[in-house]
Amino acid sequence: MDKSEIDTPALIVDVDVMLRNIREMAKLAKERGLKLRPHVKTHKVPEIAKIQVEEGGKGICVQKLSEAEVMAENGLDNIFITNEVVGQLKLPRLAKLREKVDVFVAVDHLDNIRDLSNVMKEHGLELGVYVDVDCGMHRTGVPPDKAPDLAEAVTRSEGLYLVGIMAYEGHAGAPRDREERVSLINKAMEQTLLSVELVKRRGIEVNEVSVGSSATVRYSSMFEGITELQPGMYVFNDYYLVEREAATIDSCALHVLTTVMSRPSPDRGVVDAGSKTFHFDMNRYPIAVGVEGVEMVKFSEEHGWLILRGQAQEKIRLGDRLEFIPYHVCPCVNQFDILYGLRGDRVERVWPVAARGKVT
Ligand SMILES: Cc1ncc(COP(=O)(O)O)c(C=O)c1O
Image (tube, rainbow, N blue to C red):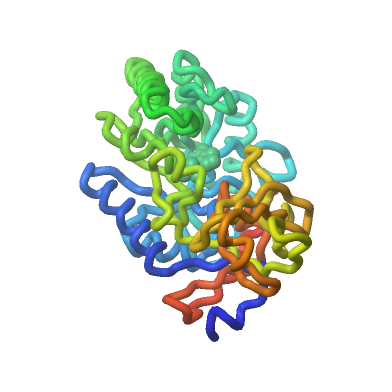
């Protein structure tokens, strides 16, 4: 199949760029003596997860139990759900999954530790647990001074064992200003390592200290005491990361292929991909690549509204195919059933996005 035969809108992945991204991150982790646990929530494709493992990943991360189930069904093992798994509907599913594969979860509440212990005991299983520490994002996680209590509760709970500490510093990658990012990463790693110190002072062993987002991992991985990295978006990259100096246009492996479906006036065009394709996130629009003077300025569900400037007003014709880099790649992928893996114009792979829509 040739690229010209792909109907639009479609997600196309440059296989070589993706492999380069995967290998570069694996090399960084290896050089620093750290474990890389790629976060597969970005692509949700078991085959790509397997490539990441073959290229040096030590297991994978997912965000949801249902993503973990899909990965396990497709042959992956050693799966860290970097999230709290809470509720009586989910816990038996977690136990069932633990019967099949090595799975780990994050915890930030004593009640959850009790419930996890009960369900694992009931099934005669052992579950590895990371204490989730809030290193500044203020999403989930406990402050560092509460980590020892949770760690101790885990070590005392039948059916559970402590793996270590997890602290996600995604917030630190958000500022566009480099100094601000560096300052936030410094603070986040300080908080993370403080929590490790406090847990150790309680006489409890901390084997893994797991951090890392694609925007910050090159710097946060330099802190002594970190053992494991869990970046996700680096596999494809996106314009969010380009703006934060963590990627370049050339390292963005995934493009959205669209067709110009309307040319209402010389300075306006419309492509067949709107918010149901890209997902409108962070108030930002995707970036056109390979053409000058094309700016996406608005979405409706099935329409991407373009302003055309300069030569683009002449050049862009009805039926032309335009490519865009999503601003945030993860929710965009989650809207598609398949990814096309391309080498040049040749379609080499069609990957089902098997964990698409897996949010429970
Ligand atoms: C807990 C956790 N770990 C790792 C990641 C991966 O980070 P990124 O996608 O920025 O590389 C995320 C992303 O949201 C996350 O929530």
